[in-house]
Length: 447
Image 1 (cartoon, helix red, strand yellow):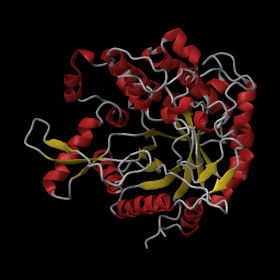
Image 2 (cartoon, rainbow, N blue to C red):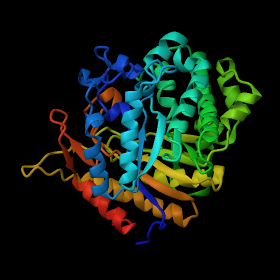
Image 3 (cartoon, rainbow, N blue to C red):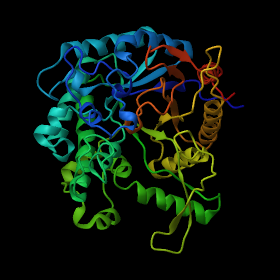
């Protein structure tokens, strides 16, 4: 089997709200997710993330697990309200101290920190006082927060992702029945404007990070575009899938990487299109150093004689799926990389999230033999080997997740980790998939 490049970065990813716990400890402010999860009935089983994985108190143990896995890099997120309880102004020293200990511990262990500034846990004060990302002022406040982080960690953190998955706190936080925080349904125009404002926040943060960091800082994105793959590798289906990828991702991914909205997109939104200026679009398109893709599943597309030139095929009930019900189609990851190369050229790529939930069983000997996760990993990594062979500038892979964690609206029902967490005792158990991943990292190839 071919090896990955010698400098390939093998990692794992987490987010602050999903693992830290200590939701009200040491001066941390309230986040929109703290508020949202307190509402009865919005989270499966009324689960709360007040303790989550207790990573706040057990980060040293988690770093030791990363070393055991042989991780080269670790992607985590800062809790904005842990550092700035009101979102701006007063700095909570205890919050910064925690991240000092975490980052220093990673560096001492030889693990490269990849830091996400915002993974959905907005300070509640900003939502209450100015409407959160419904207000462009939040974008400017976010840039100030980015500058603070860059200055404080200058020389220690050299890889930043300003925002994780914009759609998940805008379209899902304000649209439809708003299944994500802040959970306040809004008119379509307001929802679409919140997306634009988040794009603007990203661009302003890129500038702030560069202006306040050493020259070698790397800044990128971590997005979950709508992934598609051709029904099969026939020219007309491939062209249809290319059209679908561009069409479906014209709101977030393409503006981030090209600095413009297409006329087709603006026409489609009509009166609900976001309000923006040319200066804002230039900011949104601020040059970045890498694109991060969070990949879980994809939809099948075929050529069609309609206005769009493509049509989706419904995925049958008996199709292979994860415990979460997500379709398992690793070839979609291959096509995601192919479309990246077609549309965005040689911009370096990381897989910033990829993984699956499983219905893990703790056996009599205490082991978790999660064979389904091993097979999922193997199949997706094989696709990346093919992508590298095709010339995709793939630089690293972050498995989601290091730990079982609080999985947003479905609480603790879905386990994604290489490490099992007992949510009562917080005991960590390395799963068989973790052992497999450690061997993959050591061999630098798919086993």
